[in-house]
Amino acid sequence: MAQGKYEEWLEKDNLILLEAWARSGFTDEEIAKRIGIAVNTLYSWRKKYKKIDNALKKGKEYCDLHVESALYRKALGYDYEEVTRELKKNSETGEMEMVETKRVKKHVPPDRTAQIFWLKNRNPRNWKDRQCSDYEEELLISKNVLENEKLVVEIEKKKAEVNKIKGVAEEIEDLTEIEEAIYGKES
Image (cartoon, rainbow, N blue to C red):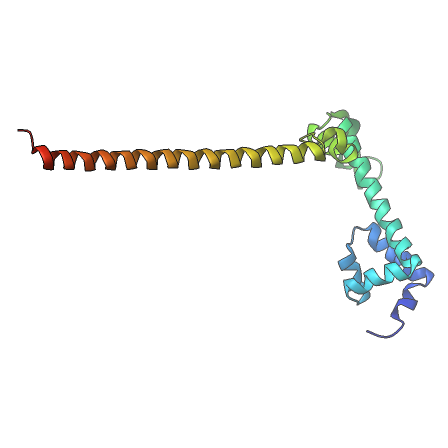
């Protein structure tokens, strides 16, 4: 990479080009490739040279506003006119031309998915899927850990009880053997 390459991108025409690329939807990676630099170099230029950063921000803001507007319209629903045109022969000139044959007013109903997306991103405090504070989440996690620990303790107690019962059973077996040895087997 040539020294001072950034200088040419500080010129007015190139700043306009950077803005246009960003407005066209190119990512930073694609813009860096068009310039002939690594994307990390572009990030560095954006930090060092406000003119480059501002040109890219301005172009991206334009796109973001249009997408935001389209999402908003889809969330609320909208009306539009559908125009049908057909190729017909002009009776006066004899030439083929496009002629409007039909105009219909149509309505696109509000889109629930767009509404949810809009609300979750614009007002996440009130519209996230699960509404609880960080403190409440910590309490839930702590409660689950505590319940798991209690279950482990109970399982250990049950194991101890089972072992006691096994021990008692073995003692009874031993006493039975002793009794049989002393008194003999009953027939």
